[in-house]
Each structure stands twice: as C-alpha cells, then as structure tokens.
Length: 345
Image (cartoon, rainbow, N blue to C red; front, side):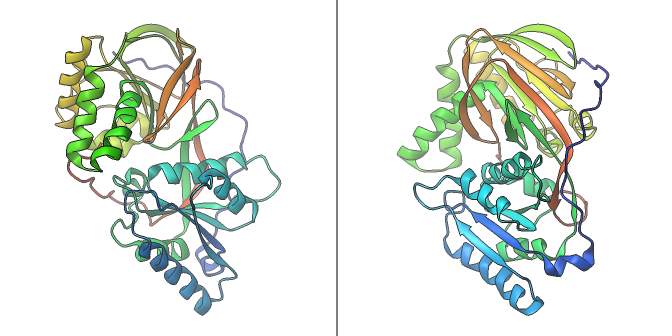
C-alpha cells in the first residue's frame, strides 16, 4: 500500500549554520568527538586524525583544533554539547552512525540559542557507515576524512527526529529493536562477526512476542495496522542499497514508512532473509507509506525504539518529524555515493 498526502503547512524557520566560503576553510576551528567504542577500535586512528588536523593547523594558522575522546564513564552526548557550546566552527564525529547522530543531535538542540551553529563533520570509523557513504566521505583513510574537515565546503543536511531524539538513517519499533537487543548479548559472548549478527536476527525473530497494534497517522491521514515491524527510513542511500522502493520520496524530504504484514514468526524470518538477500518486494513482504510527519500510537505505553543501530525505551505516541536542511555538513561535493559492504544491514 502507498499513501501519498500533501505536505502540511511549513514549519517555522529554524536557525541553521552559516555557510562558509572556500576562502574561509583555512580558518576553521575544529573539534573532533572520538568514540573508541565504535566498530574500528584502534586508538592509533585518533592520533592519525589529530596529526592531520593539528599538523595542518600549525601550517595554515588554524586558531584551534582538538580531538576529545569519549572515556569510560563519560557521556558522549554531553561531550558533544560542550564542543558546540565552546564555539568551534566544525564539530566532527569520529565513529559510527550512532556517534554521528549524537553529535548532530547536539548541534540540532542548540539551534534556538544565540550563538551561530557549527557545521557537522564526519570521520567514519563504524561498521557500516551509511551516513559517510551517502556523502562520499573517505571510508578507509581517517586522515583523508580529517582533511575534508579543512578543505570541503559545507552543504545542507536534513535530519529525522522522533520524540525529540535525532536519527539520520532510520528509526523503528518492533522486530528490529528486538534484534539489536539480542545482538548486544551475542556480541558480548561471541564477539562481533557477520555470523553473530545473522544469528541475532534468527534468535530475535523466533522469540518475538505479540505483533504491535498500531494507530498510524501520516500527514493527517489515519490508518490502523497490526504488524511486528514499523520501520521509518530517512536515508535514500540505505533504501537503494536494499533495492527497496521509497528512495525517490525520501530524496524529496519525506519519510518512507515500511510496515511488515502480520505473518507470524516464521513469516517474519522469511522476510528478513529476503531483505538480507535484496529480494524483498513491496506488497508481498511489506507495505509502504510516505510522508513528512508520522505518528505511531501503540497500546503498550512504553516500547523499545531503535535509532541508527542504538536502542532506548520511549513513550507512545511516537512522533516522527523531518527537518529539511536544518544543519550544514562538511563533505565533498555531491557525487555517486560509495557502495556498502556485502551483508551490511
């Protein structure tokens, strides 16, 4: 099913980061929030980043550059907010998509303040790096990604938000948060591997409880659905990678909401296998609804929500809002994005 509805009235203008010209890039003040807990857990990478940024800074007259690592017992989001408050021109995330989301959230939350917003920077060190791939940021060379922070002009960047929490790729209820919950325990016991990730999917889906009874409102249109999964996609790149419909709608600043049919546990496992194999199809394996404002209400007041691979408990109703071009991200000029690794999810 596809539901298209006209966009509602325009939201009040939000303050966005000022765009720097190329002549201003040499004077950027840059702070990197480095997360040692991301996929590539090599502390020497942070030294490479610091040498690149601060070495270039000494030769170009950059007023300030810092690499602030998230240490044990330290809150990543608090460290990111402090960097925003300290007035850097660029606040960059060195980590996976969850780290990037935390830094983007700190910048987004500061948009109603008096100071100019910093630009978002990205140094991909995660497992799948969907955000960096979609922006054509160098993946396997942290020093090259760090140089982008000094040399590339910023461009407009949209974000998704659910109940005040930012997401960049997707947010979901039901089966996927359950998979993440299982994956966390399996990784702790057996380590990170593709096989462990696949096993977490099978185990989570085979033990999944009662499907969600949902009231769904999309841009003012209301429907009811019973499903084990509601998946709100914001990344056109990620949708294309899995050969799913909806990427064109997302590029027009809308969400693509995917709802799986209520087909029982084994039916859901079959659909997960088709999705992993890039053979999932609209109608047979899922329904799609698209729009800018999505609200999902569940009978159970508190549900586990997944956002860009992170999970937390949130309270119904779950209100998803798209904020087009609200941030500026430092990235190479738009071109064909980099392909995702085989088996990524």
